[in-house]
Each structure stands twice: as structure tokens, then as C-alpha cells.
Length: 403
Image: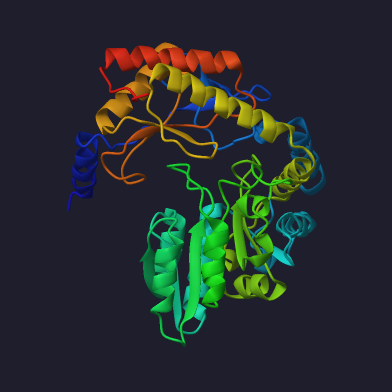
């Protein structure tokens, strides 16, 4: 059988639909974020506008130095799984930092935020008796995969709708172990969950609460503990999950909760037991980043300024973007082919890199460019971006926002 022909047939369909993804070949400039060298077609140097390194901490001198020092002290790798090779001291130090961040008894590290969601939700759903997982309908793919793998009963509730959640919890049998899974900041639309209301509904029905704070940690709250810290409800949430690969600028995922909860996941989650541990240098860099952002609000303040400045400039030019209270600015194109074309022109002619977002990440017909201003984007960067978008809106005859 010609397997390549089977592969290519489906790839051709993806390309015809405008949903084939092309990854830019970029080389970040150390200490010069958000600039990067472009090894693909187009401008030699580009400004990156879609990074999830939201605060530029991956370039922070203290973070880089911590990683270098740890490599010199411990070497490059962790030596295998923690189950086999033992726990490096840098891991326990980082887990203590994370537990403190969220006001929890314990934390547990994973190799990515995807893995932490997949492993924790699949373990909870599979091992708790009569488990039913109630999932917000817009939860991330990692949460969906974890729920699916658990084989527990699943119920979807309307996005950010505590009343619908209340109705669905009330309809469950008394012997059900109820798990409410949701996010704080939803990364594609940039909207924020009504966490307090959701927690109150879950408490009313004696449900475990599972909160993904991936797009909020480091960015919100007095110390970067996320929306749950900002709203003063972190202590009421059973499990808070997050990442080290976005605002903290490194890589890895984690969960926090009670000692018993984290030990339970550590002991039963295959995604923890059988995966090589994070290198000690990564853990040391992440701990440094978290500790810095617990004390410093300068990065968050400047990021909020640049987000507001970009939104105001887009509004002046009638460039349609989704209104939301977060740092994520989705500029709506609503056509996969045009979305790809605009992204290509921005890269080739203007030195602006933004990745088109299309199906299956977002529903068909809601294609967009997702901009994430950082504190290191200058006012001149913003002016250049808005000027380029304004030109393209005229050239492509795209609809403008109604004032």
C-alpha cells in the first residue's frame, strides 16, 4: 500500500481549505525580544507579535543566568524520570515556589502544560469513584484529551455560564464524584471566566474544582498567581494548574493543591511516572522567573499599557478586534485563505510576524490574527503594526469595525 499517497491526500485537502499550517523558521535575538531573525522567506528581521512569552521573561538576564549557573552546577539533563533517577533538588525548590505562589500545600511538575492537564484530569476521572467531569465547552485540547482518556462520564456546560453549570450539577445522582474543569483566561477569545461564581456553584454541589490558569499565571494578581489570586478565591479551588512556558518564559507545566492530591497524581499519573523530568537548569530558571514576578509588578504594568495602546490604535483605524478584559487581542479575519495571505504579507513586506489562527484551533469562519503585546514592544512597534494593518485592510477590502 502507498501510505504516502494516503497522507498526501489528507494534506492536500487541508491546503485546499486554507487550514494547512506553515511554521516560520525564526531565531530569537538574546536580550532583544521581540526581535527575531527570519530564516524563512521575507524580511531578514521581524518583530514577533504572537509569542506566549507574554512578559519577555525568556530573555530576562536573571532567568538566563540562573539557567547557565544550573548547567554549570548540575549538567544538561535530569537523567531520566524522577521515578527512576530521583528528584533533582531544583525540582523540589521549584515545586515549593509554585505551592507558595498559589497558597497551596504542594505542587507537582510536568514536562508541559499540555501534559499536566492530560495527566491530572485523566487520573482524576479514571480513579475517583463514579466520576463525572463537567467541562466548559471551550476548554483547551489538553483538557479535552485528559477527560477523554479518563473514560469518565463527561458533561459540557455553556461557556462561562455558572447557571448552566448549576443546572447540570443538580441533575447528577447523589453518588457521583463531581469534577468541574474550566480555565481562567481563554486563549483564543481572551475572555475571563467568572471564577467566583463558578466556585460558589461547585461548592453548593460539593464538587472538586479544577482551574487551568495557563494564560494567567505571572500576569494577574499581586504576585502573578493568576485570576484566582486577583479575585481572592485561590484557597477555595481544589486544583490550580499552570505553565512555565508562557509568562514565565521557560517550559514545563504543573499542578498545585493539597499534599494528598499532589501525591495521588504523582503516584498514579502515567504522564508523570513515565516521562523524563525537566532538566534542572529549566527548573532553576523557572524558579527565578516566578520569584522575580512575585516581587516585581513593573513588567505587568508596562504590558497593560501596551495592550491598551494597541487596542486604542486599532479602534481609531476601525480594525475589528474582539473586546475582552485580557492581554490577548484577536483581530478577526473570518476567512482562512485571507488570514494566511495577510500574515504572509505582514511578514514579507513589513517584518511583522503573527501566526494565523484557524480551524481546528478556532471554529471555521472565526479565523483570526492573535496579537499579544508585551512590555518590550515599543510604541514605535505598535505604530508600525497598526500602519501595516491599515494598509492591508484597504488593499484587501476587509470590513472595518463600526464605531
